[in-house]
Length: 459
Image 1 (cartoon, rainbow, N blue to C red):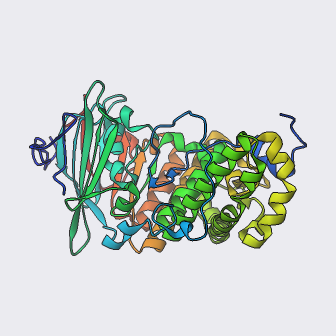
Image 2: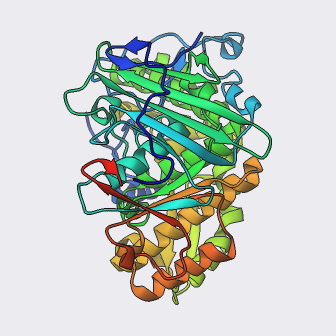
Image 3: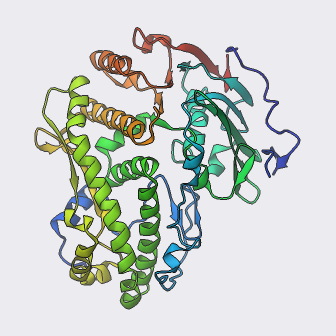
């Protein structure tokens, strides 16, 4: 067993939530525009409600709760005063930032999580290489490590699927620490009632958004090749997660935008274009902030994206650009754009103007990487985006996030493995957690303590 591994005993076992030990807390389709055609080619469904990694709802901010299929209830838009009340997601919902962001994960405790045996472990300061055959639980351990970042599954699974099969729920506790102090971050989920609870330093946090930001990590899974090979929604999700974790103003604007968009689309689906127009002002004000922030990040990141890919061995010229209507970064431009799209919106019963329709375009020699790139090139581009995410969060938050890599080296050819390892060596991360089936699939010179996972247990 790895050093520091003991039976899970310090997780407030005297309290129960649903049987899980709980934390001790106090019509006709009009012609398609060039922009719409790009979105549809990139896999974006008209009017879809996409999972952006951080899901906003009126009167709360829930992180990717289970999707509910029900007829929308269209409410009248709030007045200007209501937009700044606590009942609308525009207030300072990143209060968790005030407690600070911590540099490294010092201890992890989990019970009832996936196929993992209940555990409590001390994490090495530099991180750990997690080895194990497929299906033994190494990715589940990585998922438990990431859970305190956004309080959601690294794979996007709903919480009821994260708990042990047939169990009452799960609990994860992370002790995170900077050079001066530490913090305890706890999350539990009870199947009975589908209730999630979070606490920071023993104080229960009513909204998940207020608990975010105590520990930062960037994760790369094999499925993240979808950043380069998948639909536009994958890349919008990437931008929204990165920018929301970087800046609370973006998070607040995104919350307002998604709330207004949902209400506007609900009005369009019930053939109430007059009511839909009532949400245009909120959509314009918040959508302009979202669009401007995305454009600014892409402008800054373009050269660095090319440099990262060059360092990883890509010889062809690459380009990173934003596909959307740049004029919508100004809220004054929205009225004309929404008016011009009114007929199309009514026909499709969905809002067709705004950043929810945009894309982050990756190009290789002037052509779409999604269309012409090899699997290796697409995977390398996705790794480069994750490295940009790592650096962007470090610059925005003033602390280096941890890096979680799931079987990444096994998916790269030997030369790119070596280049990636050298890249990590040149600018070491605060902590690295890397999984691989065997130690010979880790690149030489990767100086991390090794743990082995078998049948859900760390050995």
